[in-house]
Image 1: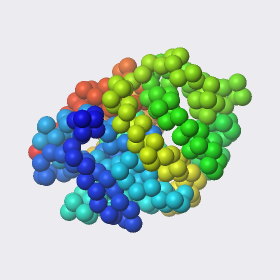
Image 2 (image 1 turned 90 degrees about the horizontal axis):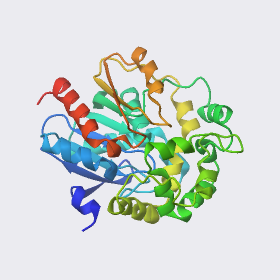
Image 3 (image 1 turned 135 degrees about the vertical axis):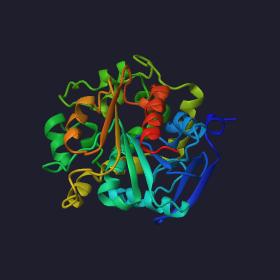
Image 4 (image 1 turned 90 degrees about the vertical axis):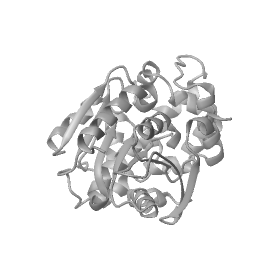
Length: 326
């Protein structure tokens, strides 16, 4: 049996919001459910340790493969991956399950989505948990322009705006791509340094130059890695990269949305060694989120729920017990 079969519940599929969403569900169908939203380049499988811990603690947990990923639909237009669609999928999933409100927990790109949920669908949100990804107010200018100015033209988010090439490069050798990203903190902190061309986070050039071995520091076992590799070999990278291609579009549509999150229990978990989403990025949240509890996971890099699952589970379950007692 594969790691997907042994470490995850049986998958479900449902048609919502114009797409088919694959999702995993565990725990008793009672109380306020927790919806776990993964990042890039990940899957609901990234939450395998949390799904088990939450279910074992008697919590109802739901983890979708979000659109463009895994078992879910992969629409062919870039605009199919904007924030209205991404949050709309989650609302559709709640409707399907007969859920009025949920606690939304997101990591990496999933964190961006869950922090938008109370701004766009406040009536469906009971609480928010950010893992590595902080709540950020709307940028003062187009974020892609900011990234280009601050990090250079080869910074990966700027590069991802290019049609076709990013998904071709990432998909050329999916095993190498996943091993490049899914590494321990020391390796990822080294790739965060400026390249010879001067750009920071220049993943295209760094991936091409990497021999697949040096500075490996692999995070996943071979059976776990295989789950990710097979999913992206089958589904490709167009959908995941297209999430990034909507940064400017999302920014335009965010005009007029609230710039704060108030009257909602929120938990923020940062990771000491995350080179992409640093703990310092979460500091402004103290003045922007009215009901906020914050913790820092020592010794963890970017893939926190997979690097330090026991600590993440302890923090989430402790907060749930205090704010949403059974």
